[in-house]
Image (cartoon, rainbow, N blue to C red):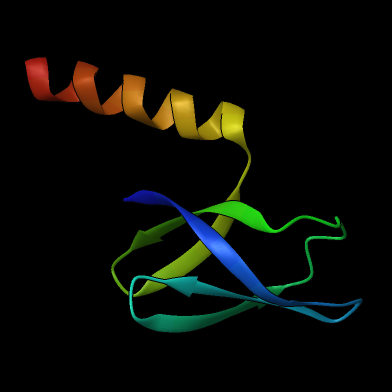
Amino acid sequence: MVKICKVLLNNEAVTVVKYDDVDVQLPSIHKNCSEIAVEHDNGTYWAVDENEKKTAKEKKATSDEK
């Protein structure tokens, strides 16, 4: 599931975001921003850009129709 998460820490090494009630450490996103889109699946978290977020929603709707 993709959510927009608040960035708590962002430096050259890591990015830490708040995903629901969990603080998640990701590799650095190399951008200066206050929120990013993060996807979670089976205990794995990763940053996605806004275009991927829209694509993920479209794919889910297509796969549900089958």
